[in-house]
Length: 121
Length: 108
Image (cartoon, rainbow over all chains, first blue to last red):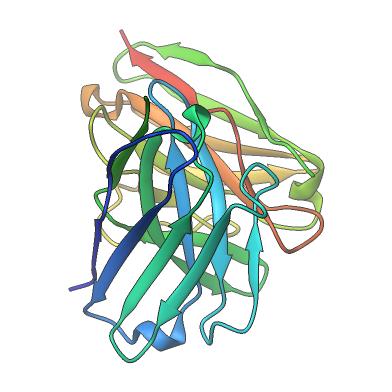
């Protein structure tokens, strides 16, 4: 069965860095685009970043562009999110999600359980 | 970038039908997908594409689109359907995705 397991969250001071990981299993990881989505406490979902199945293209939300970097290791079935220059407003649960595309229909068909990042001094 | 607009809260009587809407220009180009999220849990996909349900999602959930508005309809709402519902689509640029603000559904 498809499993996505995030790790790497924690408490970090403003301006510091953190790297999140998402370990994938149960499907051919190298065939799917992967996303990071976050949710601040008590707020809605916010799309963060996408990386294509082969890693050649990456796109970011304006709120994280230039500070966050998404990458993947298809040989180890792992997705990463390198977060630099963290701000208090980056505090959120971070989810990784698999993208499913059928024609003009796109969706996130599987999600991890999330990892909490708290940016605080 | 595009945005998707959802009503913050909707209520429905047990057993009745409720429609949750999502409005945005990107919906003229891309289908919305809908996610159910219960407290402390990860989102779960309930509707995608024109009107597709993943395996395990009850058939009381359905979706539709008209112009720039996507709708999620729950027919015969059950108590366990009380949750937050989020819509999502690829944005008009094609390189970003966007979520609506979410709708909190209360079952009375």
